[in-house]
Image 1 (cartoon, protein in one colour):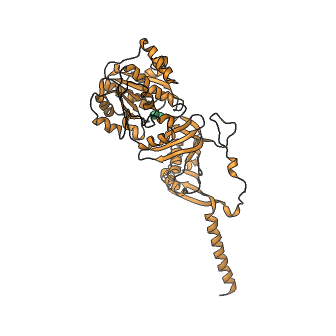
Image 2 (tube, rainbow, N blue to C red; image 1 turned 180 degrees about the vertical axis):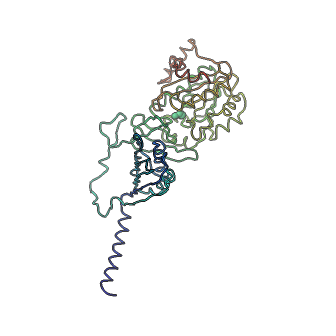
Image 3 (cartoon, rainbow, N blue to C red; image 1 turned 45 degrees about the vertical axis):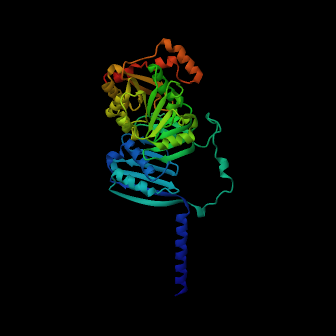
Length: 450
Ligand code: SPD
């Protein structure tokens, strides 16, 4: 073989090897996509595009940090999903059925999974793609200083003067949201058979339990919810001995109930063992009583449990469920509350996590209707409390009475005051109890026809 040919062949091999190394040893992978002949309606729908872009990141296994999307007048959408592994971005021109999309990922995340998903969601009839490796390690020089010294984590819970992490957890519906800045520390992140169970660390509220993308409880404000779901019904009833809690896997409700010496037994039915385990390990101040001998903890579906429960046995049923999306959906149905009604004692009280009159408004109103159908109009009440870490901050518990509707009176003031001071409660007291049942007119109006 002539020398020139050998050299050419060798160069080709070298070039190929170099190219393979270059492809392999890069920091990121960038796919620049032209989606053409897309569905123009989708291309002009900012909330659908945002949902699609976020789910494109998630199904590729990326961790979504935040997203921001904007609709331009008269048409067009731009937006970015920031992921722990870089970003996904889009600019759409509905009038051309066109979207310019870039999918920039690093680590194990395969941007092609996001590509396939978006092609489907946008109904793209044709496309073209350029793939680029970003940050060829062969061409870069690694600095030899200790990079960990550049990472700052707040050492106290107040807003730090200086921070390098700006990661937000957002609990939102289509139109509104509540966001908490968190340190980036993730103590637990497990996909259970029912939901994604996470314990994250927030700056303002300490550690937080999130189910899917919803805030359930935080170390620093859980007392609002747990004191207000448990003490009012116990004082209104006056002689609670046997309690059923549906849900409540974090343990906060049980912890508060067990402050009442008269309560002899609590049965708690939690569908997701992962929630219990995560809270036992990472939220000890909330889950502290989950091993109390008065508690019978059953890991099972509460909906099935009440179907088979004995009749007339519980003085108090507390439905401490999550929002009506995912495993808690059945906790908002007529059938479920009919079964609860049957298993309540004749003077029993039911209290349910009642959603917000300002967020998930339909669930709030529908639950009220359901309780009125089963228990009777005059046998239901709504109480409101302030929930700083739930969207809108206004949240409700909805009450239903199998016997007569009862309320505390002034003869109980001293007893309640003593209880509050003995247990050093932070939210509940006699006045808050009564005032929580006073409703603003807009709330009264929402439920007046149910
Ligand atoms: N959006 C939050 C609804 C409240 C869910 N329950 C919280 C559980 C606390 N034990």
